Image (cartoon, rainbow, N blue to C red):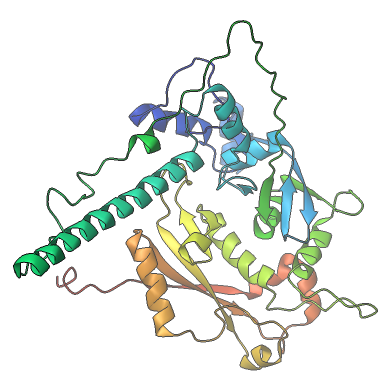
Amino acid sequence: MSMITSSGRGRGPLKGGAKKNENNRIYGFPLPLLFIEPPPSRLRSILGLLGLSLTEVINPHCEGIFDPATRSVWITNAKDTMLLWRRGFFGKGDLSRSEPSWLARQINIRKAGGKQMTSEEVTAKRRAERRQFKLDRAAAIAAVAAEAEAIFETEGRVIKPALSGPGIPSAATWRPSASLTEIPDTPLPEEDVEPAELEPLVDVEHLQLTLQEAFFLAWGLDCLTVLDPHTNEAMTLKQLWTAFQLAHLPPPIPPNPAPPLQFDNPFLINYVVYHHYRSLGWVVKGGIKFCVDYLLYKRGPVFAHAEFAMVVCPVYEDIEDQETSSLELQNASPFAWSWLSTINRVNSQVQKTLILVYVTIPARSRLPLSILDSPACLEHYSVREVTIRRFIPARMRD
């Protein structure tokens, strides 16, 4: 459940079906746009036969500012931040792991004494417990080995140290120490001492959109206005399209002009993949944690883990374009089998299917560079998918 807005009823964290229902209520809309269906009527039936609709579309019209240094768009308005995250899981908090929850964590520390933890705090607690378990187990195994050596030196008997047993902690028997689970009690102020007044919290976190997410919201859904960082004026779609491409090119050295647009621009290749899967209903998020480019969620991170991990592999239609290009695209050249095996093993361990997404880059010999001035060039790119599965003989004999 979201930890951004706390309930005023003072209830504990929801569990089971109640938590699922709460997530469905908060994150039930897959896109920032809302479609309101009118009540059934005769006019609606007649218009439906003619292919027309009276459905009302509510557009939130969010606003952000382009930051070329980080190749992202910043959403600083708290209302727009919550709306874009809750309706489609766009962006991430710059001070959070995923969901913008920095303010909720600070409020939790002040008011709840840290008893109601956010997702980041839960993850940190689990990692601390896992690290302590490994240390305790290693210490127990070392003690058994030292005891076996002592018996060999004194009695001459060879004893094989046991790696399991009552004295060796296991995942089933080990319990975290009190220091990892208990929350230290803060002493209450005395009656004759007035507690110090805390300064009011100011939310300094903003939502950070990738350029692919920002252009999808601005061009595909028309629900985002991006401001120019220098003039603070709204940028047109053509200006956005050009600026997002130039952000991935080397900066010009005066007095040299800006470099020309290229068909193998990283923004174009990644946007082709992002738009392709977003238009099919998937929630697309970054996958750097699992050594891939993107992760695919059916509904979103709060509902279930991602099922697919995608590696973007650019493919040049004309191999001469790759040789003369000024850009070195990742995964454009054949990679080693050891790299592929490593990526596949990492994602297999976390129950994700690895997909190689091949994006074909059109040849410069058959298209003019002027076509890159608008998103119309996207129709010349194609996407192909190859699913990679790790072969395990003991499990796949049938």
